[in-house]
Length: 82
Image 1 (tube, rainbow, N blue to C red):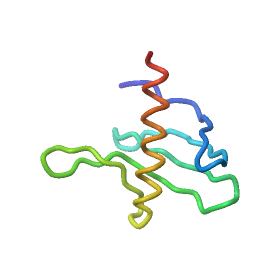
Image 2: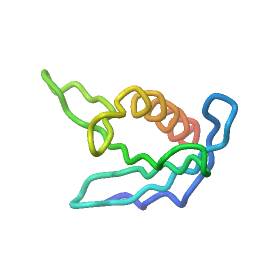
Image 3: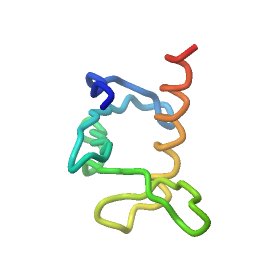
């Protein structure tokens, strides 16, 4: 099992957001704090048809935000592994 990342900050549309990674039942879950501008968001990677990965919100309903922020998180981790 990999180590859970400590909280980190990213930029979304010119505003800072705080990302906290958690592990729930063996899955990586990300809590996004918009620092007061919007309600917090929880996102996770889902597996769709043909084993295709996608970012989704929990609960569902904020899919567009989940996909945008999920891409930022993926880029952050890719950058750390270089």
